[in-house]
Image 1: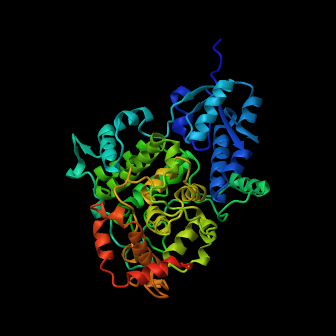
Image 2: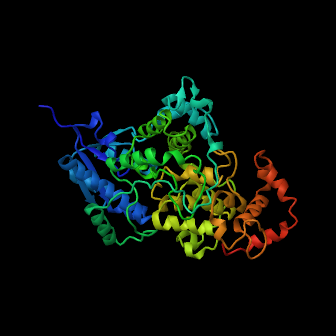
Image 3: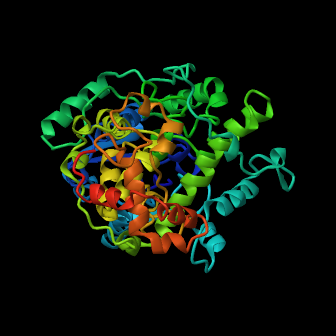
Length: 494
């Protein structure tokens, strides 16, 4: 008689059907562990904790007798009580990696399997990376397209162009909302109700506000969310993906980052769905390409660089930024902020733990860059407060892309701007007390003035970069530069 194989222990971000019901796991029981110690250690946004617990409990309910849901202080406690070794997929953080490999030495884990949540394996990425000392996403993205035959016509990109970014930078329309069909929304159930009660009982000091669950936590829900996006919203995604509208936080964005990062969706299934829509003529190629670039380009690039750069990457601070995050920023106090764009971004983080990539980079990140906030502290802030933010997600996004603290290992220039960019790409400036055209005075835009203060502080570095040298030349022609610098050196109100 053949003995039953070891159970499969799934972390809370490994919940997809393509994982637990893969052929190699079909005979395995599933182990899910809610660790109170892990919840207390991670802290962060209340709604992210809800998503994690809701996802595990919904999966346990779906699998019935096949699944065991353990509630314990720590993971080790549950595994000891289980009384037999488990297998587990490689987790998504270095700390968890070290932990599960220690459990192997203790005999609690029989085998650590490759992580199944990304299209490209870590081994294949390292072969691609070779001995390179810096990396560009566009190069990686093109290799991904070739490797997985996504939007390719033979050895050429579909439509003859790799990147349609130039078509995906439209300013928001004059209307109050984009006017597209709404995204798919989940319906909460008894499981969500119990999760909310259990989180209340833990008495952990979460960040952010509690609120209705906004994101998919099961494979079926994630597939519904994907299909709604592809069928009703992808067509208008690309052209407005870099725009911001105060009264329309979803615009045409997919809202799939949470289910993707819970591993509810296979990324190749997602990009194939977008490709099929473009091939059939349902959406423009530019719209599909912009979305596909986010999934198999940016998301995978960030994952692999997290591991490739190693733990020491978190210590990078090439711009010598050491200002602690102010209380209003750390506490998500949107009401303490006058600048409409910054207040709206903080409100989105507070109320739902999510804003799309442009408020992250060009509002929150740009503000932090201009104000010299400590990049490691900022990285932890993003990890804790975003419902799609995990240990692997934020270091390269924040330290590299947003804060240029790695000195250019993965981005060719710092990403910051004055109020003119925000005025062009958002509708915030229409109702703001600050004037994006003004550098000095009570109504001077803190982004406009902050941009020139940042440029002055780092003029040597910026002058040496052909992409930013012109900004230094323009700064040197400002007749009121001294007044701008004096004003920003003492600015306390934003």
